[in-house]
Image (cartoon, rainbow, N blue to C red):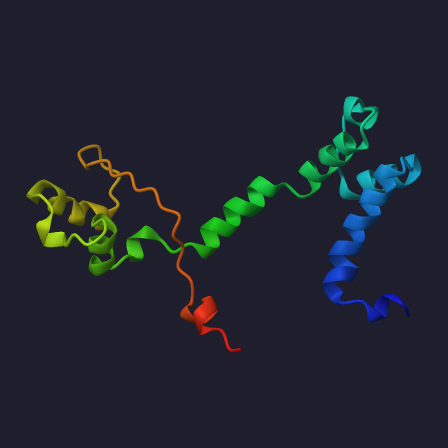
Length: 147
């Protein structure tokens, strides 16, 4: 009855994480063993006997919920493919500040087609682009949110 009053995310995800955290911090060996066997994890004796319970918690969570896999799959699913980029977007990315694409040297402008092809051939130029920009829906921007 009391569980029905909690949101589904709390029941299925957060309660499990909280119970694992409580069991490890209180050093409840029976409950920890039950959780580890039900999840099919293999925790080394070194981690389980460590003086700091956070080491044991980290060993369990890194196998149960590996963050690297989650982040990589999220990036692959959410960030658009570089092959879907438009020519105008390439020109904007290649220009810094107020410069226009036409003001770039001819050698740099020739990279536009290679940029759009994303070719892995041995003769293709290597282009490295580092950015912290991610596409965001205009409605999600703070200035466009309803007040």
